[in-house]
Length: 101
Image (cartoon, rainbow, N blue to C red; front, side, top):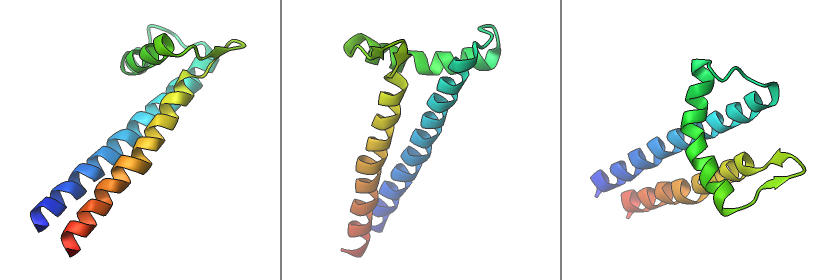
């Protein structure tokens, strides 16, 4: 059963790092949006291309514009934190119980 335990630990670790990286991409995109970035800059285009599909989905389902502020990045970041605390932590705990049980 240690193979299944190691597999779950590996999945949880990769998921944790991937979600952490994606969260930082959203934070950087939110910070860049405050300074009127050059839309032809390759870094800005990359950030927009990997964040816009998620933000568009949230904006379409929930009206998150209040007073000119867009709260959709905040909803995404809170969702990522929830997934990290719930799913990733659960995977680590399941792997620990499999390894000891």
